[in-house]
Amino acid sequence: MLDDPRFIFSISRPIAVPILPIDSGRYGSKEMRDIFSDEKRLQYQLDFEAAVAKVQASIGMIPAEAAKEIEKCSRSGRVTLQRVSELEAVSEHDTAAMVEAISELVSQPAKPWVHYGLTSNDVVDTSTCMQMRDAFSIIESKVAKLASLLAERAVEFKDLPAVGRTHGQHASIIAFGLKFAVWAAEMARHLERIEEGRKRFLLCKTRGVVGTGSLMGDQALEVERLVASDLGLYPVEAATQVVPRERYAEMQFLMALIGSTLDKMAIEIRNLQRTEIGEVAEPFRKGQMGSSAVPVKRNPIKSERVSSLAKMLKSLVSVSMDNIPLWHERDLSNSANERFTLPMAAILLDEMLNAMTRVVADLKVNRERITQNLDMTRGQIYAEFVLEALVKKGVARFEAYRDIQRVAFSALDTGEHFLDAVLKDESIAKHLSRNEITSIFRAENHLAASVKIISNVASMVKKATKTRELSAAGEI
Image (cartoon, rainbow, N blue to C red; front, side):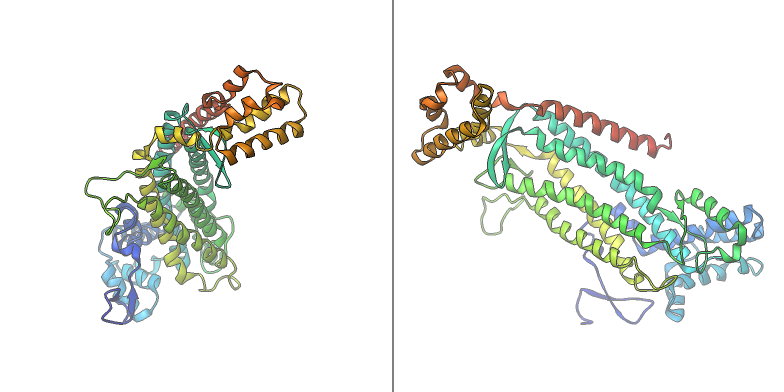
């Protein structure tokens, strides 16, 4: 096993550590992967220690000079991952190793005040939320970009009649742009969910061993409030030694929910790209190969990748739910898996957003094929509208329904166009003139509220993305 290239040796522990697929650089953007690198994780923890010391000094809890030393040391780059790993190899406690590394570098008078009043999970939970603060900033930006792209494509195809399918069967007529509008609306809602969720899951905790703020006494909550404000987080209302894992589960679920919307889009695109439908095609760049054996294939690989990663992303929600119940004020049954779940979810979702944005931006839409598919059933897609016209003429609904069904099924058996069959049928023709019937069989007459719906969604997306921009700028 030790010769297996899938494994490397950890400097700090004499064991083989598996390399995750996300570590290889194949998935996710560099900016997202960097957030979860060991070096950056350590720096988030050091920034937290610096912020706490600074706040404690500002209210007279610890000496100002000690706080300055701790802050300078934590932000100077002198506390290295290598040294922390060396100390962890002895203590087998990563947070204690980080605290010891700081203590080694500050003066004797400052040493007692390093990590004052804190417990390990104050550092771990708050630094994790700092990571997710930055991860959600990236995710939110990409969701907003995708929402805008989808709204643009919805408007582009707002007047194009297309087949609407239910149960895999032709059902009625929609504007092709409505597909994009449905997806755009959900992306706009995801922006709202992220914004509303921040105060629930981007949390700061400085309350010590069992959540009472014990060593800081009646100043504990003020320390937490000020540190949270400094770090762009929110103080936790109540906690044990750990932030309640419902908050982590919400982050996990929100990322899975966004991923599920992307999967929904991917599955529709994959279906519409099937040879026998052929209404869309993923972008296919010069030199790209769809198959090693079949030169003519253009596979929807980006959409398929989204669907594949969605399965893993959604599975992580179950793990986060299992982490909610812990023994008493805490145990370690959540700790090991959380080193994987949140980083993996953020990186995989980032990859899915990148892939789907590229697909939507350059998706090829075959207008001619969309129009051809409307007549694939030889006019039977207009049956709903023939029924409506008869009902408006005063024909009982089920009487009209049975007549239309009889004519439609007969036409299907003989291969006759449904329009011709309707024109010839006396029970229908006696209620509707030839002009009325032929007017029914024009697709553009049946877009109903599609154009208005698309317009409403475009406005909704514009408002949601504007709100996000103002929020990011601190203007709301």
